[in-house]
Image (cartoon, rainbow, N blue to C red):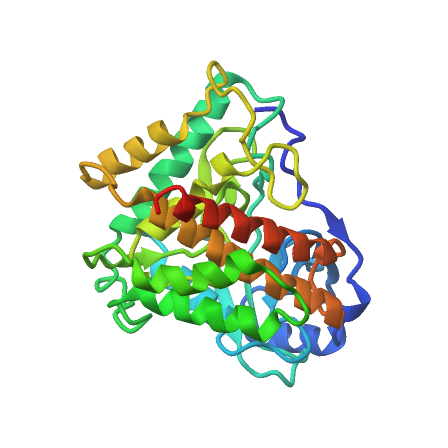
Length: 356
């Protein structure tokens, strides 16, 4: 794996995300063990939800701060408190997580609740095609991603202290209801017929059977931290959507890249790439590896889970677009997500229409 790939992009704090850095310094000096101010604050570019910052203190220690965005927020969205709790609970488990250090729920310090975790000197790779990597590294990265998801879904959530982390029953039904409401609340003047059809069809076609695991909710290559030099996963990032629920929507979400065109900026995919000889497994091979790791014979309702995954990302992207219109988005390119929402919904509906 070559050294330059996956380096974080740091920028000056965006105007809409500036906060009282002096107040933060005072708070961290009093509550974060080992912290030595003053510190410099930079913002990580990328990501569309909770603004994320690098805090470099006077002693050379580096921390990552994640906070809620400013402005009016949707109910249950941007839950940095849940991120912090999930990482604390999973510390030392088979699912690697950053060391979460401090949660501040007092919005009076910097304007919103936030948490601080240790900075990991690793890489985040957004290019699912892994251009420029060797076939062996590509195979190892995809296998590591697959194994990490299976490990997360195998964690004993009761033993981890997460029995009250979510309602374990009827996860998919509740998710469809939640994201339908979020979409309606943020759609504004957007007209996306495929989304309307998905909101009507998905609740009627939920596959039978209940399973309960810890669900990440946004499990993809871009939310994994890899070792600086080896093709090895060292941490799962971005736990905002984590809860208890059915594991297969996590797998389907992870496999959306197989149905997204290669080369698009917002959600780069693998569609159109001949994967033979690249080291990247086919979707069938990737799903089979997960099934083997989790003791499944197969997934007969796979198209449903894919339709659900695209419905969900469409609702999320519509929310990003709405925040961009309001001037509160975490990324400068957020306005483009209106069309991404439409394309995602149309892709999701194709899995339905192919089966009806």
